[in-house]
Amino acid sequence: MAVMSPKNCLSFDVEEHFQVSAFESPMRRRHWGQFESRVEKNTEKLLRLLADNEVRATFFVLGWVAERYPSLIRRIASGGHEVASHGYGHELITSQTPVAFREDIRKAKGILENILSGPILGYRAPSFSITKATMWATQILVEEGYGYDSSIFPVLHDRYGVPSANPEVHQLLTASGLLWEVPPSTVKYMGVRLPIAGGGYFRLYPYMVLRAFLKKLEGQGSSLVMYMHPWEFDPDQPRMEGSLLSQLRHYLNLDKTECRMRALLQDFSFAPIRQVFSPIERMYHERLLSRPLAGQ
Ligand SMILES: [Zn+2]
Image 1 (cartoon, protein in one colour):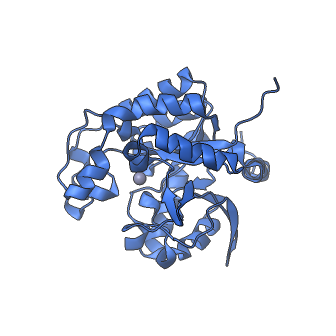
Image 2 (cartoon, protein in one colour):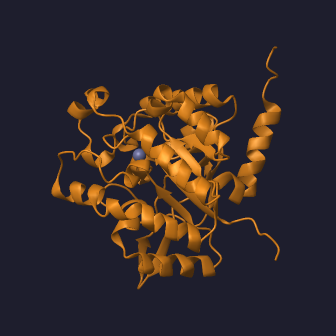
């Protein structure tokens, strides 16, 4: 049987369990340094799980994490995974000025490119916070040298989403040039567009229901774009204070993630975003070719 290269993407947003937007407060942000760090251990666990299944993925890494764990970032890359940017400080774009946003994504890109000595082209906003109100961010991404974005969620949600956005991979024309948009997967069910791509939804739906939706989407010829976080594989993480809804979203079925993930990896084949979408892969090659030769 011919070996086909996978057309579905698996991605992870690499951040600490205390950095998620659901529990954000200025007070807590100031004390990030005092919380127990679990990101390295959780990401290592994830890397082992992926290696066991010979699956490669895209890791959108927070600059804050990369700065503290550069060797973890190198280990992700040496496992054959794609490293992309989750910004630096996990500030929602909806609460940033364009100037602060530019600084945040530039800093993250610089840190990651220094660690890996290679181009970083992908970006995913904290909590998918490119909305209609923050669409200006796409132009700044182009200006800062990013080639694709995966932050526009085509659903209705209280914190994010552009319900009218194109749910397929497409190009956005910004005032500064083109940007590829790789939206997380959604499926239309009884007239409503449902998020099924991962995170809380991955833990909320019974696996067989999720699998049926994903198979339906795959059957229609779409590439799945799934996302998860290392902290979702850590049922023993310390509990944070927050609203009941935030608690539910963050802690629901954490003990089931790993088992479901193993099932998902058996039922579908995945590859990094750059590998699935050839125009993005070509951009990497162009960037490498256009880089000035290192003076050595
Ligand atoms: Zn995040």
